Length: 331
Length: 119
Image 1 (cartoon, each protein chain N blue to C red):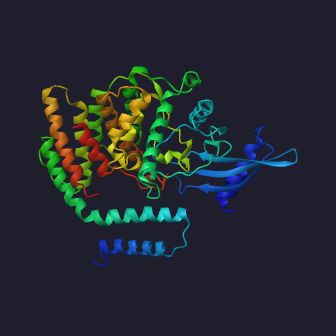
Image 2 (cartoon, one colour; image 1 turned 90 degrees about the vertical axis):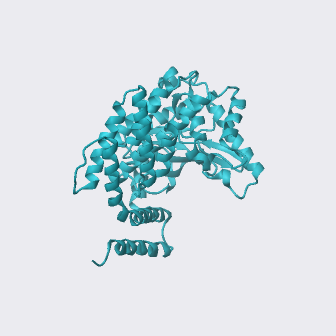
């Protein structure tokens, strides 16, 4: 057993023993998934003796990284997941929270592990026929519509997430500009120009929905062609549905979300509009696509700082592709 | 002067490639190795052109900002300084026709810079 595994195992044992519904369990098969300091996820089974028989619950421990592309609040993610349990969406059950890291070393949450595999390039999978991939792409789009139809008020999410109302675009720009200011190690005139242009043209929002904010095949689990889980709700917030639609139709993400010649960005928009029963405001969508490039650039700025400060192992930096895409969009 | 910078970077790359070819790395170590290889490769392909790029960019920035040319022994520090001035200018440009024309001029410069940046 490695030192890290032994340490996490012991912390988990103590943490679970302090929780009534985990106190009698044994941690079995603890192993780390992902690598480096940027991701700290551990899978294990909690085995409980019940009436002379063993019951096993598959779980995943997700701890805040030392650094990475984004810093998010594990307590908010835990509360969002808890609220989503009654939504009908395929989300993991949130089991326990160590909000301040006093038990597990860093703020952490324990979720039930769902079956399925993750492949962020599934729409390019050569093992699947074009028809199967197209059907999957449509299913992904339908699931996004389901996310946006989530009755967040009925689920009590208004107590967890602020409703930006009509100024959803301005609020997200404020949020990511603040992250830029916090993490930038030098001036980026390219990003300043983007902020100015985005600020001038921020559209109003005509409805507030639950926004996933990092919707992609890489955050879905599949069994065969069935979606078993939609993961990574750490960036979720209330806002404009076009934010997610812009995120998945932005050119920088085309390799993950489109099938060349069969399922292009325009097909995504048309399918979304049909499935959601809405007209998509193309000018507003264009703003959100530009914002997506800006957000990506800010994530890279944050990632660079994390790497240079030794909190992350991935050498991110604002890339030529992202900056040129952003400038193309704002000029 | 031997070893040259290129020779040292190539040596580091070769050593990392040897580690990779040893084939007994854990997935975690393999990913860390790939990150290190990416960094070495990036520096190898850009270090020799970075200073000339910064010198040329400083000249273009000086002209764009309508400043008097100055001499400097540290083009990187001067570049950071000038980019700071440009960032402030972008933030403070008025929204009138003149401001928009200036913004377009700055935008064209930034596109050229991003395309030419060797780092």
